[in-house]
Amino acid sequence: MRGRAAAAPGRAPGMKAAKKTSKGARAAKAAKPKRAAKQLRAVANQAAGTEAARRARHLKALSRASGAERELEELVFGGSLPEEEDELLRRLAGPRRVAAAEGKGLQDDSSDSRVKKKAKRGLLLKNPAWVDEDDEAEEIVDMTHKYRKDLMKSDAETTLTKKKLKKRLEEQFQNAMGGVPAWADLENRKKSKRTLSDSDTDEDDDLLRRTGNFITSSESLPRGILKMSTCPPANQERFANGKLVTVQFHPSAQVVMAAGHDRSVSLFQVDGIRNPKIQSIYLESFPIYKARFSVDGEQVIATGTHHRMFFVYDMMAGSIIPVPKVRGVEEKFLRNFELSPDGSFMLLIGTSGYLHLLSMKTKELISTMKVNGRCTASAFTPDSSKIYSYSKEGEVFIWDVRSRRCLHKFEDEGCLEGKCIAISKNNQYVACGSSSGVVNLYTTDACLKENHPKPVKAIMNLVTSATCVTFNPTTEILAVASRDTDEAVKLVCSAALLQYFFLSGSVRDQVGQGLEQPGLVHLPSYTVFSNFPVFRRKQIYLTQSMDFSPRSGYFSIANNKGKALLFR
Image (tube, rainbow, N blue to C red; front, side, top):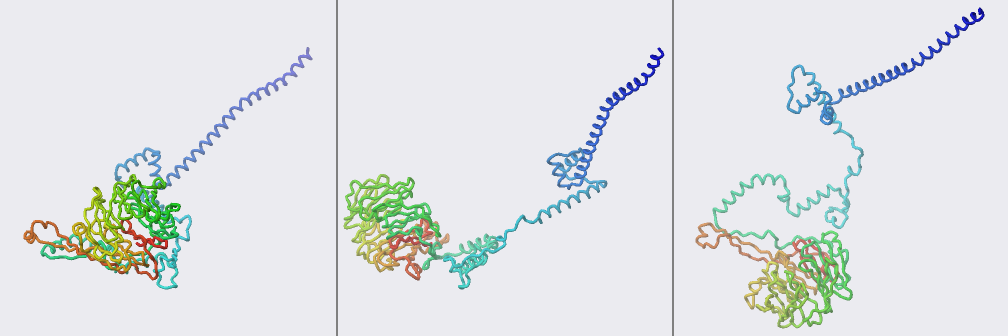
């Protein structure tokens, strides 16, 4: 028992140590979550400190930002502090009242304005991303081109800068105009506007103080010399292989038509420089004698040299419509024809003096008229109410289109054989060309009333048969030509001088109550332009056809070389 008793005390220290160890393990296990929590708290504190430092740096950066940036942020995102919002509202409401205590704020604002000015200067002085050397170099123009050779002062001057060429053109224009025009002188225009009202009243007062005759020339077209320039041929992109018999401008578009014996009809856009081709049609085994646009410009009618049929080309549909035979028209060949200005009728000029009036819509015969002898040419009046038919014997028959009756007949003075006839667009003049080369110009009133009218002008500048006459749309120019000799083209000025009679009130009462407006008396000049044609070498050759553009800006001549010469 003593041994057991002795052994028991021997086990006691080991048990105590084991208990201590188990308590230490439990304490260590309990301390681990505490340390983890402390570490988490430390990490959170560190993150919070970092965020606080970041915010502090951000606020510091915001405090250093310029006034313009702060204003932009406030306007876009709104103010972050109530004081800033109040400041913004006060600034939008009106000017601020700055007290003495806000002197520091004023200094800050002035510094902000200086910063903005510096920023603007920086933007203005900012260097470009790249520099193009071609922009700095002056453009060189080749003066040897055919359209710029006339501007060269010497053979060594083969190139010019663009600025010098502009100056050279201005000098040429001033020499041609005799100085700087009033509309081109800006300084004088400003001065003239100021004194215009005063001068007008003075002139009116001076004009009303006296009576008399005032003679002035027409400002629309000068006499003697016509300013005209030569352009490239209208059909330069496709010359005809044979004689070009027709040239005509489109009634509404800037287009010209050329047709000839090479069996083709071509359309060109007129620009005076390139004149590009629009299209061409080919009529097989059909040499063209004459071609014309319809009045609406949608069709082209073409007749042949030895055919009883004719063709209608519908430009809108792109189709070629043959008209093989017109019922009731017994003609071996259908060559010459005319179209009425209103687009209703087509007049076929047959042999033995027969005139066949067709409907333009259906191409069917309406009626047939006959003149004494052989009819060489015909023309409609501008209102399409009458037809003037010129016979080979020199007689002119005037027909009423509606009733198809002959209203009047007169003889062309001195005519041996009639060749061509034309009526002015204003229905004022009738031009008759004969085989002797004389073109007589009559007034329509005299033609309708007299059997032997006297021409107002006999144009005797042609020495061979006058085969073509035409008026320009404004009746200022009459073009006459002959196909029997080279360069036989003349332009006649049919513009008039105007004589104004200004009558005072007392004189008007004595003359009569009918003169309520100034009277106009036309004193025609009818002079030939001496500077056309004037070329160093032959250019026109044999004239086959002529035409003016609708606004008289261009004049074209078809010749026997297959070219449609163009003048501006």
